[in-house]
Length: 231
Image (cartoon, rainbow, N blue to C red):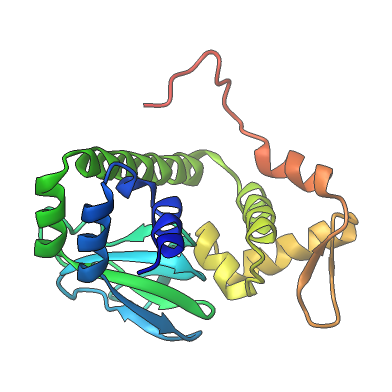
């Protein structure tokens, strides 16, 4: 691994910023890097969590499939993010499955190899605690949103988020991400288009025409945050 690659590794994954040069070298020897194509499966729901995935570039969608066959998108992860953190310490099985959305470069390090690195530098452990805390807050906010935000708000916010990530999401993916029916997504998109907020392109993608209006719809929260505590 070159010096430049070593710097990029730390820049992409801040949890390793406390490691010394020799420790970075050891970490790199324990990471298996590989490339994935769009549609590839990273891991399956119910499979044992064996280690940690590091996304260097690209996008990976984490989803859950219910017994009735309904798919729910839990999260879309991009460069610098980690997958497999929840099962890293409790050795449970994955509650969802991960599919690659575009050409992606990923590193994988087995649990025991990672624990060897952590045992020699506890600063990495604090990095993982920060990552776990961030992910916990993310899913808490999604839970609050599911109870208190309308479907139009959720869909508007997701369209804005995906624009910033450079991802074109399908109507089905919008339904999975927002937790509403496909029919509701179509009705919402038609309503936003009639109001001149978005526009469907010839490729059937969504183009934002009035970003400030879409932002106002997505950020509207029907709770007085100053007078209430969200526990």
